[in-house]
Image (cartoon, rainbow, N blue to C red; front, side):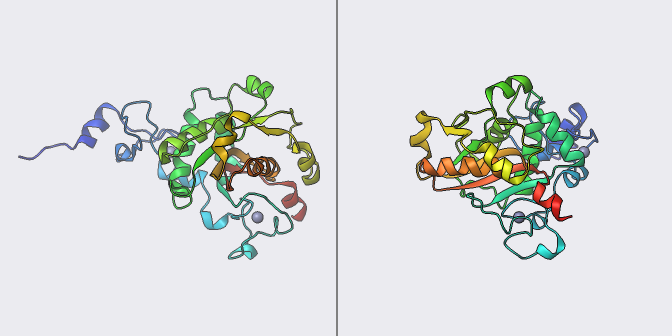
Length: 264
Ligand SMILES: [Zn+2]
Ligand SMILES: [Zn+2]
């Protein structure tokens, strides 16, 4: 006996799978459901066009600082922009550049209390960087914190959402409040590299209750936007001081830091 319709066909009729970003109908959409739960709340992977708009192929990204490589940087361990900089973290994993579509999603993510955009973008990140993000490479996931006041103003700390999503997908534990932002730092965007480093020095502390948890761990540190790496570098230092083995930074978008601007 043959079935006229597959399960996917039936699901397509009653729950048409639409791209969560552009709304286009995806005939094979339900095959892309990544989580066990099926209906409604489960984020589908966006359509191929949206994925290509949001992510940059990994070979174009500097593994050291996460910025977009120039032609002359291919095959080298550092890009021209970070050759003179020292980072305490092992490497940076980034989905794409902070502009266009990715920028608008990251901005929406910052005020989206439902976590929908964070979940969708994490799903893309996990697919596009699956050879870098796997369950064997990390022991613990830690999101970068925002200050209480800023969180209250924005409503959410999007790195928390991303961290939880990656944790669920890779089955790696997440420590949401492991790092606290103790000082409210000035917004970094207009500062120079040197000023940024000063701005974040001493701005973070380890939650004393979590210290035991960090010992000997290979940590995946999650941020939404990576700019010069000053914040992640500072957090890396205190995580290492608390006994963490090594830290890999993972961010959704890489904004152009000042050191790249000057070179243009
Ligand atoms: Zn789409
Ligand atoms: Zn670099």
